Image 1 (cartoon, rainbow, N blue to C red):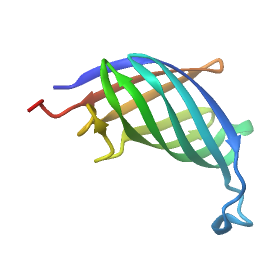
Image 2 (image 1 turned 90 degrees about the horizontal axis):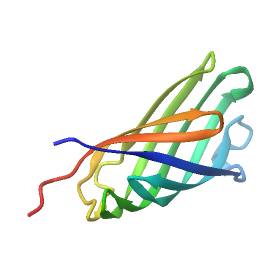
Image 3 (image 1 turned 30 degrees about the horizontal axis):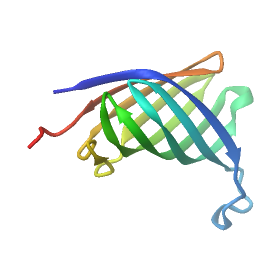
Length: 134
């Protein structure tokens, strides 16, 4: 059975030094620090790689973040994997739970999250499943 959660988050991006493997490339590297509110109360930390020119509406990024908190009353953690592109200021974003990353009461979680950035604020919706309790 599919479950649903939604809310908002604030995010802080901090530039990180270039990785030795990336020297000489136009790839930006950033630390992510998020605070989730709503049906998911918690935090996440992650890392993002991006390229392109967001100022002209064309860019892409990948990221992985580790989310820790309480999701609809269940405590634990899980990882999210992002794959996003922007073309003509239109976003195409996929955010999925990394298989096998759930811990605590969120062990076995799977699902997808949609993120909507509007006027500098971020809202999210999360469709997910959990294995039946034993």
